[in-house]
Every structure is written in C-alpha cells, then in structure tokens.
Image 1 (cartoon, rainbow, N blue to C red):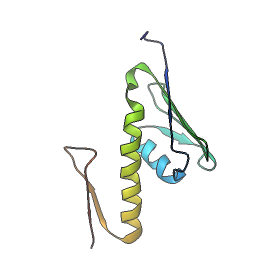
Image 2: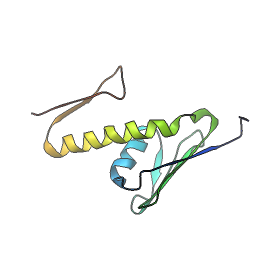
Image 3: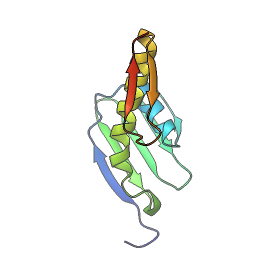
Image 4: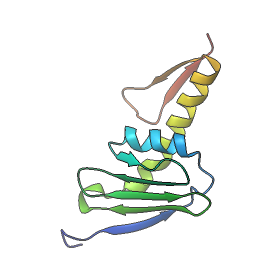
Length: 107
C-alpha cells in the first residue's frame, strides 16, 4: 500500500449512542466535532471517522492507523461501561496491562 493512501472501512454503529462514541474516539486521541445527528472526528495522523445517526460509520485510516476500525468497538464498549458505572455510582477501572479489560465494582 503506497504511503499516501487512505483505507476506507464501513462499521455498523448506526444505533450507537453519540455521546459514548464521542468519548470513545476522544480516548483514542481524536478531536471530535458536531455531536448531535452527525459526528466527525480527526486525529493527528490524518485519519478520520464520520458518523451519521441511523446510517453508520465510515473510517478513513491513514497508513499509520492500520487496524483503526478494530480499535473503535473496544473503545466504544469501554466508554459505555464507564458511562453506566458513573450513572449507577459504581467504581470503574481499566486494566493497565490490557486496554480491553475493565473492572466495575458496586460501592
């Protein structure tokens, strides 16, 4: 793949909670704009994520962000867990050794 190419991937997040998705993308290092019916996020390496309510998500990954689409789902799950833990007053902690492992405790 040439160094100036962009890989486009479609992900079905059409029913995603936009606030949780924005939190997940922010945790992945993206700057997020337009958090209502549409969301656009960009990072410093030139990758972008575009989400439209009811439509889904398009990921345009630069060469340095290969596998970006695979990182969004775990980040979304973590953000959803964090939001639910906060809502119910639970303790939430992400594992330092595995970014896809979380501990949630009832207080």
